[in-house]
Length: 126
Image (cartoon, rainbow, N blue to C red; front, side, top):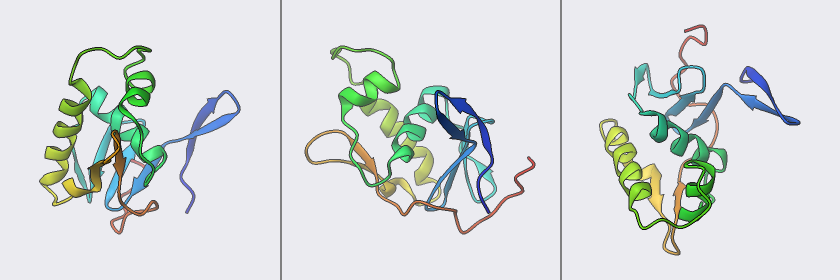
């Protein structure tokens, strides 16, 4: 079953769902689910995980995340990215999934899970 599309962003159709492993992000709810339970992601946490799920298995640098998620084009002296990653990991840890969000040895972060539908399918009409 193909994921429903929401709208066009430039020439690209933005999907409503991004799925990897047992995690499903829902753009309309701006939150994630594992099985049938919401993660309770805050807006920036959702944006961070949405960006990382855009290219699972590929490292995304701290600078890229600051630019694409925080919308700032300079390198501030802050650990905000690391703090948000830690918060997302703690929410995934409840389900034993904190290890899918990795810190790359060369810097940045990546999602280490197989993209595609989760084993648990919830009603798409929520």
